[in-house]
Image (cartoon, rainbow, N blue to C red; front, side, top):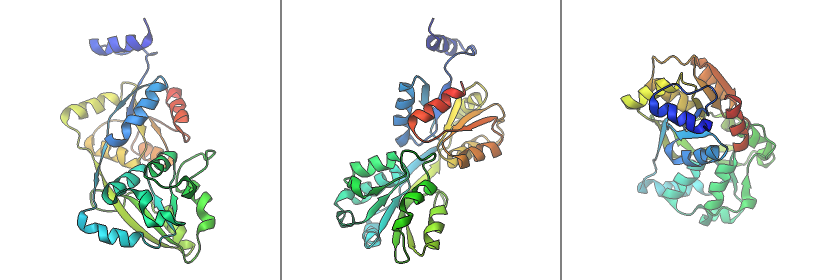
Length: 280
């Protein structure tokens, strides 16, 4: 019997899965983002499923739009921290590629191909998009800075489009802001969406407890997801839990909370699948 069906049979019967069964991979990204990751991992032969730990929602209202349009004027570059920053801003303002700023020389910065694809889908010319090269070990602000540092001068105006947490505080680090300001640039921030921790129901908390010790592999692409899980399951023992993190900072968050085994995946979906398989 193929090991995939052996695993399914064990689940239906409530028996422990054999050690050579394909482990469950829990994609913890927000629901809007999870499906492509699940499909790609399933295509790589992994048993991937969604277990969202963050929820996203727009924040810009009609009355905000005039100020937003004014804020967009005169920017040398707009840095989108994620594909969601692109999508939520486009949802509020309309087709990004039609904005006057992207009909001139304004650059669109991003840290990865997913965000670049969202910009292309919104009509931003590929020639105006800056992102880390395919050889970058991590897709982050540091890798982006290596690409765009030469564009920045004392008169630069840079706008960062990003998310905020439930308190309204800007989500994520301010490393790039600090580097830009040190170079003399004026940095503005535009919050396009909020990232809120999902409140797990009792059944989901029971599942999380099971997944912490049954060999499942948690996939984390943000530290906020780990913290949301910890908030939902404050007394859970994670010492037998396994995780793959997409960045060293995310891995450290899990390790600091007592996770048993955490590995860091290089950039790219094929590398991510290979990292997950290394834990099987």
